[in-house]
Length: 272
Image (cartoon, rainbow, N blue to C red; front, side, top):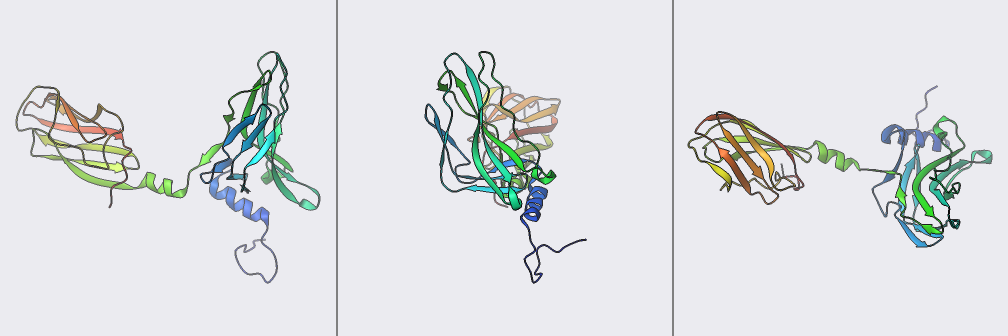
């Protein structure tokens, strides 16, 4: 029987299970650290203690918040042996279906060979599991020394980033040696250049700087990025860099030519 969850029913009826199902349906059937606060940043405080920073996470639809940093104790290692411990966020459902979450260090098995990660609880609470572990870090130990912690979680980017990745902007760019322009389009952080031009003159270029610059919002991340490769009766390529400078190679040969180019930019998105 269907039930209206987000509606007044004249009684308490919305459940944590329903909220978790909604979260999982929107965010995905996986575990994520959210892109806020310290994102559970880890600091090795001593030979047997680490500190986990603030953060928010969603594990199998369950939202867990850590408002203040927390210290965790790592059991001392043994001389001549290696071990992998895992720091996890552990969900449990106890008696009377009371649910809780806490950070736990799961101790691995010492070995003189290559250590492996300890086993975790992997049955999702969405599937009826009463204990579930979301791994956050691997803590490698070599003898009594704690190595560099290895992050094991994905950071879920906010919807604003998704919107930016789909935003489209366009302008035109005047081509060197021509009175024609080609279309310059940006979608997210990817730029595309394309069109047809008629070159008005010839000139051999050996990495010569052009007067024309790429507009802000469309400039490539790296130097010597091919932004315009011309086909037809030409041997002409334009390279761009992050300050907008364009470097030319080859000869436009007074020809008709098609243009293509694709590159990534780190510029702010141009205004509409």
